[in-house]
Length: 334
Ligand SMILES: Nc1ncnc2c1ncn2[C@@H]1O[C@H](COP(=O)(O)OP(=O)(O)O)[C@@H](O)[C@H]1O
Ligand SMILES: [Mg+2]
Image (cartoon, rainbow, N blue to C red; front, top):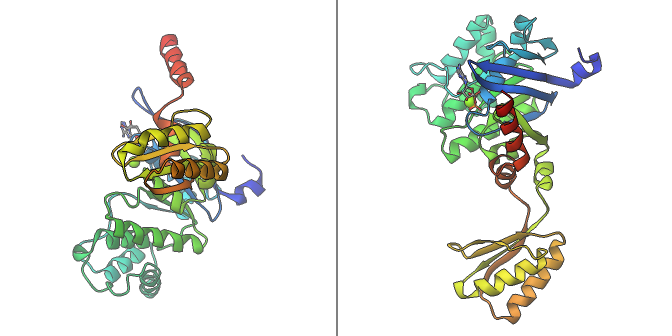
């Protein structure tokens, strides 16, 4: 057991959490800590073990190994106490199509043993909090994807849980629906709710999370703040976009020179040349001067921070060889 101070500092603590299905290891020793009142993004590709992790933490699936505490209680020994402190929203909304938004929320209130009066009052609060006031008396079957998902979020907040698990809350939504759900999640954390959010959208983890845990093949690859993750992958990149393919050779040479001699990446379709640099401003100045002297037609030139997409590719896509070697050794040993 962690000391009491730690229990109050973290709403979610997982240590060596593990789950196998047959000979498939879905979650392979997950360590995770989510500070109270923050949003933690569990980011990983399909099959990484995100849903299985959430199901163990929300007491729906029993771990094969390790331990976890949610809201200060052990998920295996006191699932009853954990359940009272959590809300869970999955990919498939549980709201009733025939009922209106207001009726749905009142019904959920009654399901959670609120009195008629309490259920009505809670429904009004949630309709306001999730901007569903105007649609309150419309049947859910006419709702857009984003509105539905917000109603689902509202339903999981009936009892104002301490910890809310959101499993891919915006999968399948259009850009507008995603933005609506993001706004709703932000408003939730303003009320002090701790959120553990799974996503395979990098921009979503980047925008919503205070802390990101990158998982792949049931294991944690790394964890950090969104800014820290981007820093870890390297500093600025210089990027040049050209108007004329004839200027590609001179640009490639100029960018390579400021990037320590390494050949830059070139996107020939977009006429874009980019490379990581250590002293961004000096590199920018030098490349701009060289291209001006060469008379190259430059559409855009600038410095940019790496995106989380690039971070993710670095961390999970092009795997370091040593990991592959480790896996081979394991296979040989087995
Ligand atoms: N009930 C199950 N039975 C068998 N295999 C499962 C089950 N649930 C998940 N898995 C497997 O475990 C791995 C992780 O799945 P999951 O946790 O759903 O990943 P994610 O949510 O990150 O996409 C996948 O390879 C999946 O096929
Ligand atoms: Mg999943």
